[in-house]
Length: 132
Image 1 (cartoon, one colour):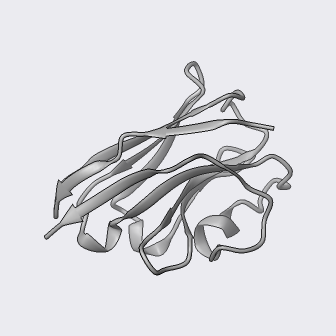
Image 2 (tube, one colour):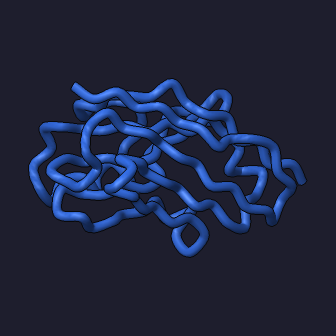
């Protein structure tokens, strides 16, 4: 089991940046799938960016080139740097981990996850609001 605590959300104007943090109770050095998800009001939860068991990263098409996922293994912390934010990025952002995903399968979470399936453990979320 893993506990995840997100922070860093807030309100920002369109075009601005935010960096989200996720403190994990397990080492982020690898061995499991971990990433960022979001849920906008009235919409399904979706994947945003994940780091696979082998350390590779995958992103949702709509955030490619704007968001960067990274980790600081010394601090057991996962980050999401979000640049060029737009109102469509407004959502509750969650950190989540799948401790049982085989290597090479985590990209599915970023590209296709829509609220069901998988075996994710969730943080409590942090709210991001982007105003135009």
